[in-house]
Length: 515
Ligand SMILES: CC(=O)N[C@H]1[C@@H](OP(=O)(O)OP(=O)(O)OC[C@H]2O[C@@H](n3ccc(=O)[nH]c3=O)[C@H](O)[C@@H]2O)O[C@H](CO)[C@@H](O)[C@@H]1O[C@H](C)C(=O)N[C@@H](C)C(=O)N[C@H](CCC(=O)O)C(=O)O
Ligand SMILES: Nc1ncnc2c1ncn2[C@@H]1O[C@H](COP(=O)(O)OP(=O)(O)OP(=O)(O)O)[C@@H](O)[C@H]1O
Picture (spheres, rainbow, N blue to C red):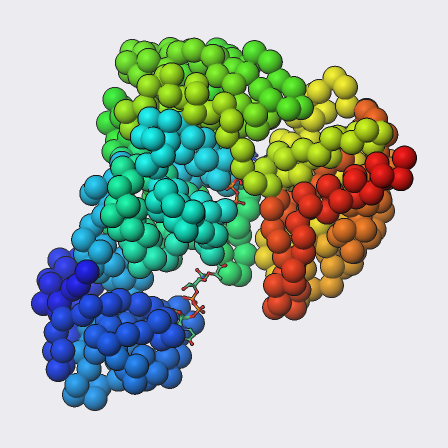
């Protein structure tokens, strides 16, 4: 892989990003990075984010021969530089060029939504793996998969990687023979131009609800929605979930971005039409739903939906009506990527996602659910689903809220608990630099104490123990918000934590050994 100064200049000029340039001693770059600790000989270095000049000096000392930045940090007569108006955009464009545009060799499905991105990504990968004999790459919040060997699967640091990492990993996927890529696209990815210039064969918009507004994320909800809608303008086909809040805005944005033949919509709700009275394409009919799985049927309501040949019955083992929606989006996208209906039926059957709707059965203390629900929309949807199950007597929820971000989640949790839970044990979840008890008290302010019994226990493992011990055979204990996380972020330190599933399993084992 390589890029030279002249090609970089041309590309940046084409996009009106270049302000100034200097051709230093070296013109050809064999490496690219935004981190001085990763620099090798002949690296083109990107200065971005909370940057300090000494990172660049350090980079030059270690072999960087050119840099791209928004200001002229170094002008030593030797080091080449490209001064640009937006370094994140420049990095995405030059990253794609450096790695030889790997996206052109992949069928790329991008998925956005406040909730359901990870689950839908795993559903789509399940289906496409069925068709491609496991040649589907995945960039998700949980894992990145760039090949078929065990070492080609690794933990993600971000939902959507930095552009240089994104194109690096795409290149690996292509070189490893992958033919499809399913990737989560966060609103931050657009805010920070990590995916600038990237085009998707299919873009999925699952839903949007208030979240991610705060000092380090989006200044307003409008900004959050705007960033999310960018996926629509960058996709050949768009798939929309009609049942989301703000659907009208999303629909008209999509309509102005793709022709109607390339816009596919789906819903759970009967007898609905689109905001312009056009018919919805796909209807989901729930056939059977239990605490362990769910079966549903898809009906094609328009000619373009009929052309997909997706009609039929599907089953998933990640229950919840919203997961039927997530699966439907994955089915439509995968069929557009050449999967068959049979691939979808087979591929969906056994999909599991770490930390999403995982269960531990107990003999005498009910069912324990571990789920990554960590805002109002997801906790509310989860509790509503559980309440609708006939066998459930009491819902006991263990939850905390993160410190220094997503502050609106505290009110959201209080509201969702008041609407759906019988008992709440408030605890800690990545308190950061805040006092977890203070966060718990803020959640508590929004809880209706006439309906819900509330306890405080800041040690998360102890809180889980108390919840399981108080569970009776027909109760459900919900461990919300932390999913498969293996640490607690406390005062800037990732403090190891065995994860909710392991904690719950150990407690249940201990209780059952005692009997
Ligand atoms: C706000 C934001 O996008 N921050 C991201 C951004 O930070 P940054 O550019 O300011 O980087 P920094 O770590 O402060 O360092 C500045 C620069 O100096 C460099 N550096 C640093 C130290 C050094 O010795 N040498 C050196 O060169 C760094 O490599 C970096 O390029 O770039 C970093 C990687 O280069 C990311 O880790 C970081 O994500 C932060 C940690 C983060 O958590 N972001 C969240 C909000 C996020 O993006 N989340 C979304 C999901 C949200 C959702 O669910 O919808 C996501 O896509 O993950
Ligand atoms: N379509 C949906 N609507 C509402 N809640 C959902 C939906 N899909 C999933 N959830 C809930 O949200 C939780 C997180 O799901 P998932 O990890 O798939 O979403 P995500 O968009 O990747 O989330 P995040 O951006 O927070 O990582 C699930 O554990 C479930 O409780």
